[in-house]
Image 1 (cartoon, one colour):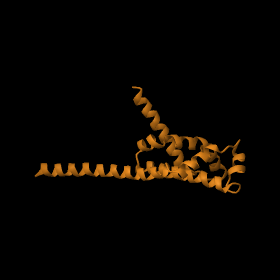
Image 2: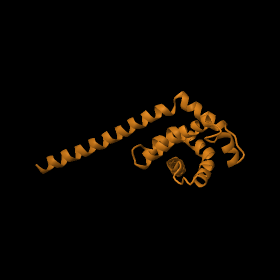
Image 3: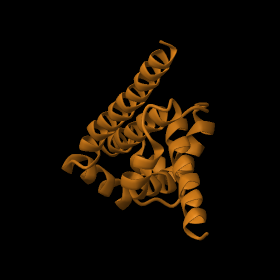
Image 4: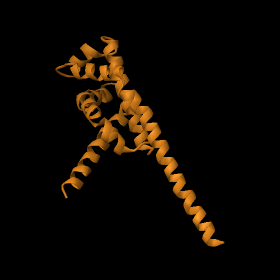
Length: 153
């Protein structure tokens, strides 16, 4: 009796864990479909090609009022990464998958836009602006450091 109950409970727990892993992978793949589509890639390229000297120059060239199209591109990509960051924070997708497939663009985005976003937080009194994109960047960097340490052992 008791052995059967323990075996059944153990089987149920194992199946539940597999189901959760499968759902996380499915969610990630849905997100990844958007990540590698042509429009998203074009937006990333446009952002990487933007050029400014300082924060004021950035606002003059790409601010909401001066260049709504460029601003929409910047926010569109940032909002996508913002969502990924929240999903990682809530443990709904695996940081390892994001690290394996998205590191380059996430890193480039934050390293390009992060200084501007930090200025926006202060100037517009918006301290939480793209906090989850920054979180995502930091998690990816942390994961990369951990992986290097494991490889070097």
